[in-house]
Length: 341
Image (cartoon, rainbow, N blue to C red; front, top):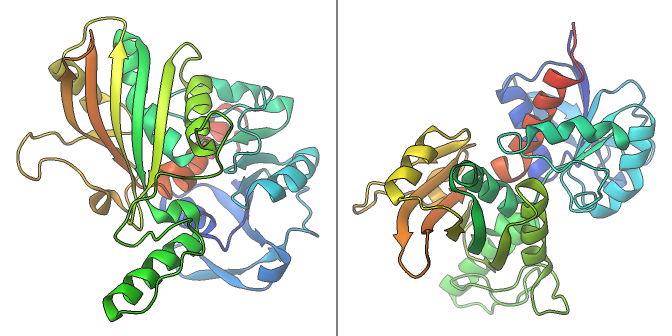
């Protein structure tokens, strides 16, 4: 006996990835419903490696009654409007947008990091999936925090255009082609040219000069990992299609060597350590695309602070940063609370 699952936002990059991962991980589904906006109603999305196609149903008229889990990846507006309706109809919502993340009654979950927090889901019947850049960061930080206590983190991100959706990926492709043939380049999705460029600006600016993406990383890391951790982030969009990278500087309460950190990370759940200290002995975004792990390389001691380490962290933002983490939350929910059979 399996679950009835609705995937909301099924036609988007992350929604399609959710469908693929449900099939790939053989999540026990008796039924999967593809749900999308009115303009996508009737369009088809693939589910399972058999090539089975599902017709999208209109979110405006969809009845969640009888569904066990809804994986939402439709943005903040639909999450605000429809997640409470689904929850009220008895369906547990796992939402990928930022709308519910900082609600104190909504657990924000990365299963390798804070699985026990899922026990609070019944307060609203909603669980939040973190920001893509936050998810991979806390997977890397958690085992080190347990070992030596993290005081402070400074992180610079190098985030792929897929984090901005299909429009971001299309813009990188179109601009790259235009540059090669000598056509003019006009930014639409991004504030400046993204092809052969980097843009130190993701999401809107806030009063203190940080962007909302940077704010999200700070507050979400504190909620998931430890509110006492001090943190600063600089988030940069780079001309990469899939895969976010992060350069992370960490200051610890207790002494920890690079060798000790490598040993810890080598055994940590969700982490793949590739740190050979030679040409090519590290992982780049191209290599992590399509994989669910958080890859860590370039682990070294930072002599500028007491008990400091620096590392390089790479992950597929559409998978661990979004779709895979959501499905892992669903698996955890099933193991702890929604057992079937």
